[in-house]
Length: 166
Image (cartoon, rainbow, N blue to C red; front, side, top):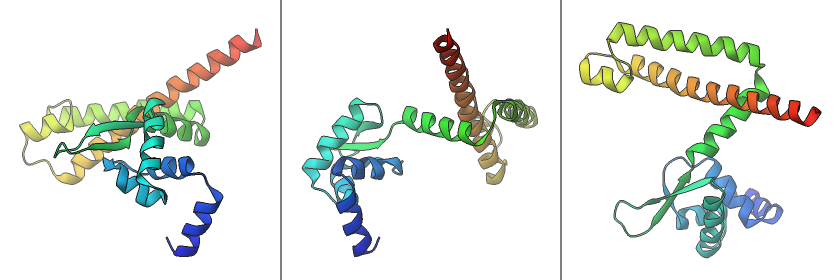
């Protein structure tokens, strides 16, 4: 980010918004100092906002491998909900339901082909499975999980709307 863009971002957003923005795209654990650097704020301010994000379930704390501090990463739940909302914004539930069935069939085909219920199990059983297949299998599993969360969220939205209509 160039200096002008940094200045504009700092002027136009609050430190909390910048910390949250940094964490929105942070999937590996990072220190408060790293977040502060990227969020253009002090480490103390970043740590304060990170604690708030942890309390609200947006960020998860984890121990540093060297045990010298706390690291922060995007919470899996918040990531799943955000992805589910994005899916619902882009896809109608009928299409999504059809796609869920297709992905389940793809996973069954992988399981049948490799005699394993998961990519990791297949690796343990078949060292000759290629990395491209492993990646596709893992991606399909992840996408199915997000799609199922989206369908469940859609059902909650529908039920909530029905209750509100009463």
